[in-house]
Image 1 (cartoon, one colour):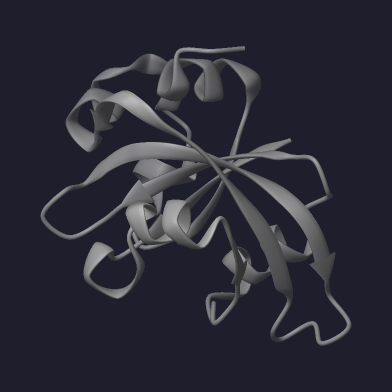
Image 2 (cartoon, rainbow, N blue to C red):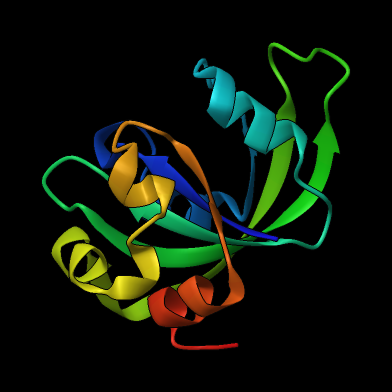
Length: 127
C-alpha cells in the first residue's frame, strides 16, 4: 500500500523534510488517519501533499519504521525522497477518474490517505 500524507507548509513543508532527511510523522488525531498510520509498514511509499495555498502533491518519502505501541499516537518515521518535477494540484486530482472514490477527494480533511498503485503513479509519474 502507498499513502499520501498531508502537511501544512507553514508548519512543516516538504522542503523541511528534505533538509531534515528523516522525521517522525505523528500528532494525527482523526481516527481514520490514525488507523492508516498504524497500518503502515517499513518500505512503503509516500506522497507528501502540501495544504494551504499550495494544495498539491509536491514530493515523495518512504516509511522507515512504525511504532504503534500507543494506538492513539502512532509514530511513523519517514525518510525524504525526491521532489516532484511538477506539483500535482488538487484540481488535477479531482479531474482524474482514478480518484473518484478516493478519500483524498471524498474526505478532504483526512490527513493520511491510502493510495493504490495507479494513483501513486499518477501523482509521482513513476511506478
